[in-house]
Image (cartoon, rainbow, N blue to C red):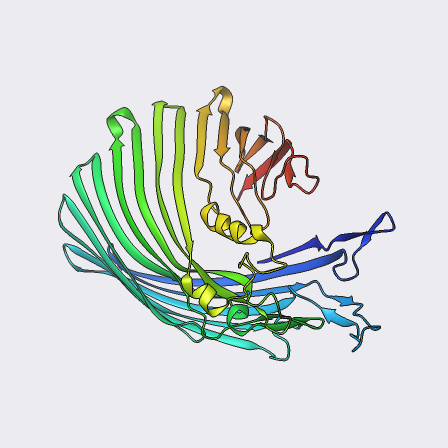
Length: 443
């Protein structure tokens, strides 16, 4: 398949009382495209044994370049230059093999391996480096053990070697105790890693005379340790279920782009480990079918997040852009970066869904969403909001042709803001009430 899109970037600048395109960040098109293909081959040996082989290919391209006028009158002069910050071309090949089998009557095993090859080129962010290549090899396995009806255990391990990020091991362990067919308690523990992008390790670009960003080949990976305790109640007699999860997640070496030395244009920005983060929360999903044609669903999540800056950040980079005591630094920047970690997920979120079958083949769906304020980026806030949607659908059959026609209304209670929202701010991202008709044909 292939997907293409054009979005607009750039800023306006007030010049003699007239808003005009900013020459150093002009209004321009950002052209993006993605092409992809995937082939999957599966061989089933028996009811509990199979082998699969998957190959995937993707190609991503972007271009937003413009000519920055430079500063020809400066001493030394800065000539005009091409700047294409998000312009790049990337190609990915991935092969994965997986084998599922039953070593014994009480165990199931899934194991396999994968290889991924990335090649990226970029005029500005990987200047003069040509095509930068990256290889990732991975082996994984998961063993399920069920010695009795009341117990199910899982032990998993993934080992990965990244030509840029190095090697890591990701273990996981879970156990489920089944009191009976309707009530289950489960426990889980795992460790996972998030590596950086090619730019984080190899990036190197300037913006005029300023060294803008420099990658770090030795940048550490983020790691996350998770502990969770869950309960699943499946009360079929009452046509009701409840799935609850209590969790604690610890993120080590949270990464963020910082100016390593605000007092110098020679030392570039970089992706740095800045914080350790701890998240505690509870989330649940309750389902009920009071009548054969009626379904109700309630989802809620409550999360509390605390982040602490690493001592090594100040020791290694005493003049970084989060040091509030430096002249010229924004005293709110350190707080904004802290809020991004602590409010990157809403502290409270609720959704309610009603599904109702109607006479004559119609189906009605209503949904309500309540979300607390949160941050999507360092410099923005998204205010809390509530939203109500509705949908009326009709499934039809015309000879051998099947399909559905539906009317959808979003934000019935009026406009709400997402991503960036401030009171009386014209730059807020406001989503107005929307209505549309859809037609689906099944072939």
